[in-house]
Length: 112
Image (cartoon, rainbow, N blue to C red; front, side):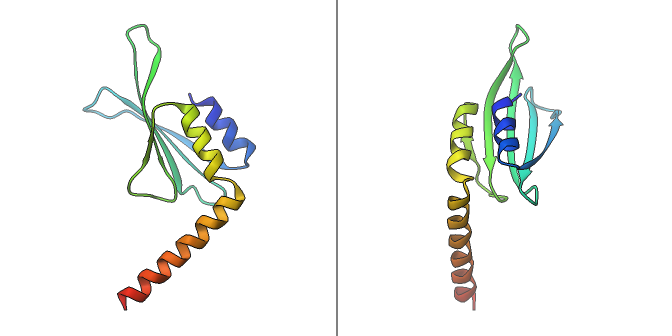
């Protein structure tokens, strides 16, 4: 499941861990990928079910970068991989880190 995503993570030297969850009250099955360069602080949550022929049907893919509260939701794996390519490049990553530091500094000042 999600071979293109795994290939993308391996090619960018990101560590990942895959975990299978079968919820008790819903018919959907869930895979959780945790990934990151040093810490596994990013998650991809895949909710899927099986068709009557036994094929896997992906219902929803949730992406949470850096422990976000509100996930990015995708319907197809290709959309997820293209989003990751844009946001996981080193230049974009450095920009995001700078923005977060500024944002946290502003919050700290306003809290005082």
